[in-house]
Length: 371
Length: 125
Image 1 (cartoon, each protein chain N blue to C red):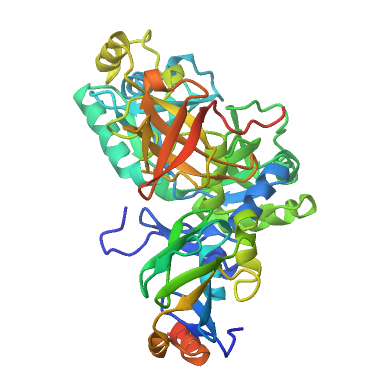
Image 2: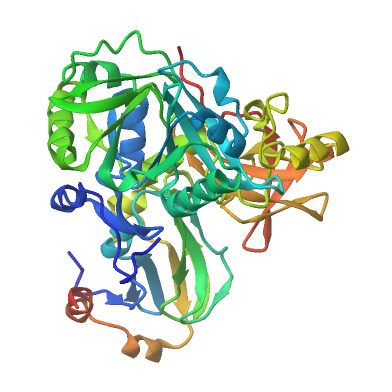
């Protein structure tokens, strides 16, 4: 998503990253830090201590009005009607054909106020889609793209609670996983959600752009005694891969549906009608042909995104995301395979630059934190 | 930083020539750009390599990069240390973590490579 001038977009923390010596990359049109001290070091820091991520490139869309719930429930496959105030859930914006517009987090602020966190590179598309559906279905709801005004900072790791608690009067311990609170962090109004994309405990903090650089600095100071470090998109990817969390454009796309992606738990076919429902019912009735699976390399090599997979010498699927799993100490990945070849223990071959490397289907997630 | 007795390529490999044998590695700049190296794929002894063609690959956490041979010749040794400890490429790219040794087929190819001073000027551009 480049701006009209072709210049990379920047988060309010851009200058802070550059001053700290982070390695910057073009990430879907955004100038983002891929690493600071090194991906493996940052990965280990999040698993054992606490890491800080600038995820301000993520989009935020607000849906308000008397029929806010009706609109959210029409465009997304999970049942937002089941959410309580202060609760969030993972969901999908689904196309009529069953594929994904995007995967999203839905937060319920009030019966007439929902807040969606969406992927950076999809935010304009998502906003246009929801607006269009709102108009088509004549809902009494208002859709606002508030992403450009908000920054998002993720504090993730076993010491995240202690770190963040030093900067807020809001009691963090009672906030359950996938719940959120509104309060003040470092003296600025913030939404504090106990969510994340790392497989660790932690929070995602939504705050006004103007407050982000100060909050970043205060979080680094607060976490110093716990060994906090800033972490980039490189570690964010290895962490989410070990946790087997989907990434739009990889495990899920406009041509892949939530049922085959192993996300039937976010598809509530029993709720009121929603976009894509009929197609998903058909797919379910016909039976799945392919399925998202986890694998580990048993031979030498690393299966990477897009590599073909063979079973018994015949083309069978492809790797959606793959790489080293630093904490699980295996080269792992996710892939699509025919359902009949997807059982745990199934031997597969990943075609690494035209050479077959042995791998095996294993269960996901690869990494699960001790509670 | 960059040994004077090595020659360098634009693709960030180095070669140290002793007699008719060349020891090949990647430069400190290359390892720094790649970040944490987690896997190294090298040719077997006896393999033929050609100047400018891929002789193997190095993988960081994020990506795979080809290693291009600075010279044409035959592989006479691969550095087996890197199989079990690819991270040594980050720690000592100009020394312990050499990649392969090659018997040179055409020493005149070396004339097209950069000196340490030229390589540093190239990096500075």
